[in-house]
Image (cartoon, rainbow, N blue to C red; front, side, top):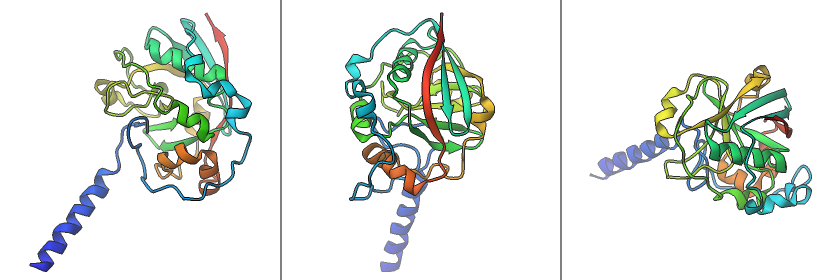
Length: 242
């Protein structure tokens, strides 16, 4: 009887472990993210660069960053793997376009890391490297909106949980044809129009290993020593709109 009980408990543990992984671009806003779910270390390491809350103090108040985006605009990203340009069409997903526009203009993506990179699937980023900033935006959620474009290669979409209106700051760039995400409410708002080779070259060796909870609570101070090969965004800016 004791042996049967031990076997039952072991099967339960294995089932929970299998369910911990997923292949959707989930954000930690309102729930746990895709990837490992280890507990963050008690001692918070020192950051490796200037804090975003000091360089861009407006990031500490999401209510200040609500400007309406142009109908069409481009955002240029300088990354550790090279430059790429995202062209945004507001009519595809207005809420997402406005949020992205304000995040780029405010410097939110500067000095952030591509923390979830799955070959053939997508690359995900958009948790600020400064925990003070990340905590302000974690629950600054947008309303859901209809999916008008498909998650095709190079298309850019906000990550979300299964909960309604859970999109916040995390975005992903599709590597493959992920049209299966369309009926789940993942609404593309733009596409990479230049530099997709740089996006494709982003380091994939860590997969889904970085813990999103630890990134939220410790930022780059957690990522840089534990995952030193991660690529990241150096700077992003709006370069054109019409």
